[in-house]
Length: 243
Ligand SMILES: Nc1ncnc2c1ncn2[C@@H]1O[C@H](COP(=O)(O)OP(=O)(O)OP(=O)(O)O)[C@@H](O)[C@H]1O
Image (cartoon, rainbow, N blue to C red):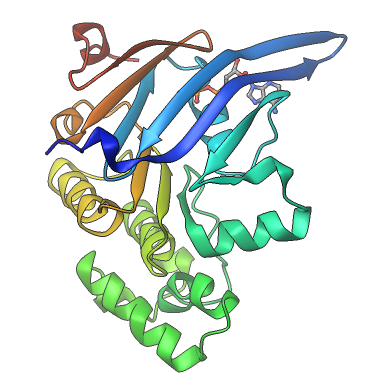
């Protein structure tokens, strides 16, 4: 499925530089990246370990400030917002799936998946019902009453995915969402991300090393040492090796 380029940008990142302090040294991790993520696209970000993928998507979704540059998400200049307004913007527009699932240990799977809805002010019972419906799509509704520690790694990951999608955010950003899953669960999650997160007015960005699902992307960006070296619909052969 390819997107209509005239759909407009979901994300416009311009001149993104990111430095980190390491002892006395400043390390430049991103070197002036310009990237426009179109609405209606499932975009993968691939590249060697340490190339800057997590740093880039964290900046694109409003959780890590760039050293230089600007990021517009659905036409809002997110680093121009006050801290409070940025928190609200993220809550209402962005779903995250990160490598650490960050589930709340003391509440069950359905309550974890319901967190964004409750944070938005939805009645708890309704939020829970919607969360269970999302867990059903991910084939783990039978685990809804379990605490995170009673779930396997793959099940915890699916709860984290349900939590990212439950409020139907316009932008979904994922870091290795299939890493803990077997091949068929991985494809199922990718299919679900496409179903829920990719629509005319939405977008989804996924960092992945998982070459089993490379065929599902509309667009692939390759990062090398903090620069984009490939931007296309095909994955370069170099990305099919082990990282
Ligand atoms: N908070 C930080 N402080 C210092 N250096 C950092 C910090 N975060 C990331 N880095 C460095 O920035 C570089 C890029 O890291 P990043 O996590 O973005 O890479 P990545 O491509 O996502 O890697 P991986 O595939 O291993 O997750 C690495 O060299 C990393 O050590």
